Amino acid sequence: MAAIERTAGTPQPIGYTRSPLGMAGSVLRWIALIIATALFMIPFYLVLRNALSTEADITAVDWKFFPTDLQWGNIGELFNDENVPMARALYNSAVVGILGTGGQLLLASMAGYGLARIPYRHADKVFYAVMATLMIPAAVSFIPSFIVVSSLGWVSTLRGLIIPTLFSGFAAFLFRQYFLGFPKELEEAARVDGAGYFATFWRIVVPNSLPFFAAIAAITFIANWNSFLWPLVIGQDSSSWTVQVAMSTFITAQTINIHQLFMAAAVSILPLVLIFAFLQRYLIQGVTQSGIKD
Picture 1 (cartoon, helix red, strand yellow):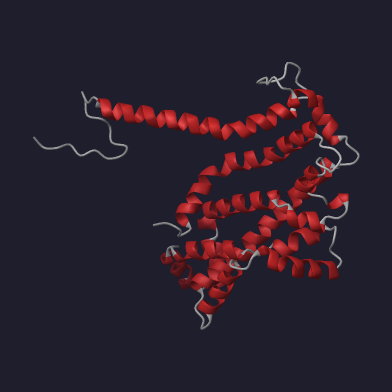
Picture 2 (cartoon, helix red, strand yellow):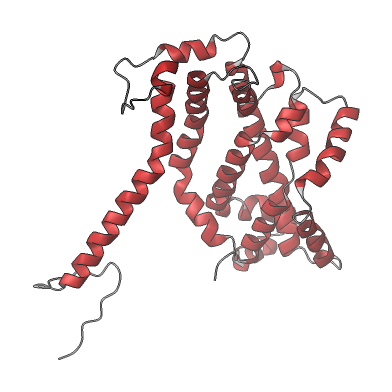
């Protein structure tokens, strides 16, 4: 009797029953998945629970899953605090995240395409120079970068927050790896029509690489949104604070405003959760298409 070969997605043969060992494996996988999901959700639960609590509820000895009286007024208290301009900080973070992400996509994608497709004598040397920037600790370039920004008068400005972070050697490396695997046939068809490298990149390569661009955009935006040290040094005026810097002001040497800190954390997490929910499938595609695989 010929053996029945089964592949992923193939319907089960009529009358087929799973073995007890296979059923036990499925049950164990589901249990592990549920436990992992619960562990992953615990930090979000704690942030939401404490954001809607009073200081007494947060520090109480007797723990309650949720306080009896939810403090929805904490939201208004957060945005009406005169010492911490949270609305302005969210706006600054959004501007830094959007413009910084757009700039990195533009520069890194063009650099990656040039390194992958445009032949010239010193291409390898330029690539190694870009990779060398990844080996330099951020602390080494921090002070020189601040001196340059300060000499240009960009302290406490959005320009000082955005422009020094526009190029990413790691993003350029990812784009190069992706473009090395991009079908050359599409580019050759554009060349036959008389398009040069620049036109081919914008008319052929970019429209056919949008999932990968979306993956890099999501990763870059999250990194820009969560950036703290550089905005802390550059944003010396409260009008240029980002949301991470604004959150840090709730913890001082004298006081710790716990409920507002958790509410600010909940508000700052929301944009990232929405971005991840919409672009999660592109994140998986980006990892598989970047060339970093077995």
